[in-house]
Length: 259
Image (cartoon, rainbow, N blue to C red; front, side, top):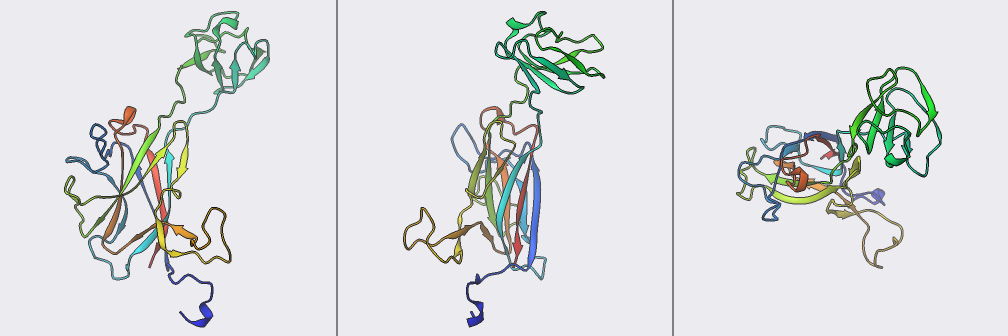
């Protein structure tokens, strides 16, 4: 490096990289045998292709330093909760708003389906004492039952794999190399994978020590270097309620740059 390159990283990307893929039924691994390796018949989704076919003249590889997982399903939070603690409160509903009945005993008239979530389907504003309203359908100012588990999003684990030198990696042959896993906690809409990415080889230029690091420990970026010919795949670990995949789907986004 030239003397004028003080405090600059020795490696730069010259083109931005942004790829995404939707994952639903692309399961990978086996929960029965507790293995993350891709099994025969499984096909993880392709997230980043660093010219595995070796067809591009201007691709020398790249780096992925940001991966985000976003659920495709979204649930509105309850606008009003009916319980012993809120009994007697004046509420106002507009079409589409949601009531959560956590204590059916406080209602003047029993709710149509008991405990759970209800959405207001009336076209005009409904105002009144929360325990005196009629939480049922069949009226111009009625409610529709959403269920007792409305809004429940199960935890889901996604496994990321790297391949090299092939456009048709073979499951159960060792072509898929496990890079890292990331679990989206239950009822969490999206997560950033930065904490799970492996440290990059090049330290981040820093003027001083960082809390939590030893006196000589370098501060490092995290990410994945991909050589030309590499690919990055992702699948959902078939665990618990996600044994056949994540029905509602997630979008996974990768950002970085080409060299």
